Image 1 (tube, rainbow, N blue to C red):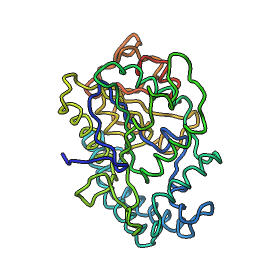
Image 2 (cartoon, rainbow, N blue to C red):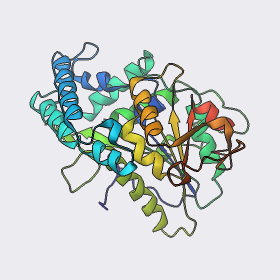
Image 3 (cartoon, rainbow, N blue to C red):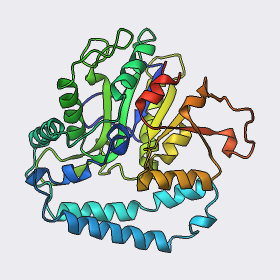
Length: 337
């Protein structure tokens, strides 16, 4: 397993009893922030090369998907689906090369990314899913007396960790309301945004226009479901080898196929689903159904058990995933309490 550090300079998580892992785009946020990221150099206008880059990526994706074997109907095991998802590394790498060759981020500094993040948050261009503050604060509070408390990690294939951090800071800065007597607000000593670890790709600090990942000594980005799983497992391993005697409990929340491996590996996997599901949410739902993975509404969660009368024996290793509309539903269950 590769060593890694956070791209925002924070150490790997340690001394925790619960680790909450979150995807960024369309999980913590209500929609993808990729168009905003790709247009930092020309914000608020869309970068003139963006549509061509997106079109080339989409075409590569379709060609690879249609030619992959076994085809979708014949992929019936997790191993087959993981191999399929990992096979897109070539497509993703080609897209990264096009982005770098187009100099989308050339000359862009971390301060540029932070300034755009603050502006888009203030303008409402970046929306956060209902209840996210309460959920993060509740996780922190529930383990606050256990060896330093819980750790909260954002794991994303998106760019950039600098942009994500600035969005969180700007959102908390513009929203200082109390979250109630039982849940500390995000700006309180009990729940600091510095406690949130961010594992994501970023723009090279030199302004060269190159993209970097969270592995310090390896020229590699977070591109696939396998990459996200490696980072999640490394974070868990770090917490276990830091002198903590308790086995950390892992909760993962995501919305797309790049989250599949982490959802299945976590102690509690939660799929975020809008009432009108996005294409990526539909893909994940269809894949779980095809693989015969049971997914239950989070309101039926009780201590990790489904509260229904029967337990389907045909699910993969008895694994049950959960779905929720937003973080409020998660807080209202006993997943993070």
